[in-house]
Length: 86
Image (cartoon, rainbow, N blue to C red; front, side, top):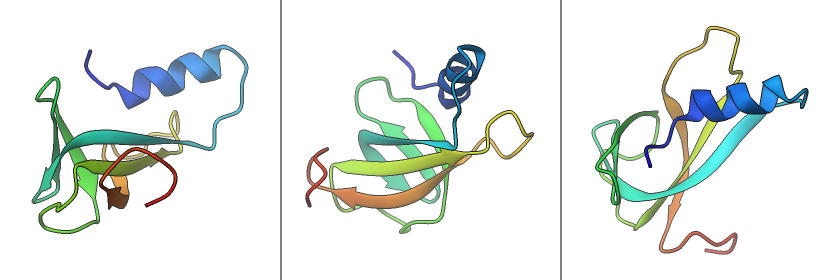
C-alpha cells in the first residue's frame, strides 16, 4: 500500500483531531533527496538528510498539512530498525 502522508493527515483532521505533524519510519533507501520504499518502490521527496542512506530505516517528518506547504517530507534520522532506540 503506498504511503500517502497528505491522505493520512486529511483523515486525521477530518475526524476533528489536531495535527502538528506526522513522523513515520520507512524501510527504504534515501539517495539524492528521494526515498524509495522497499515494499512498494514508491518515491518520496525528502528535504535534508545525507546524500545516500546507510541504514535500513529512514525516519521522516511531515508538518503543517492543509496549509499549502511542500509535498516533501523532512529527514529526521536513519536507523537499523524501526524502534525508538538506535
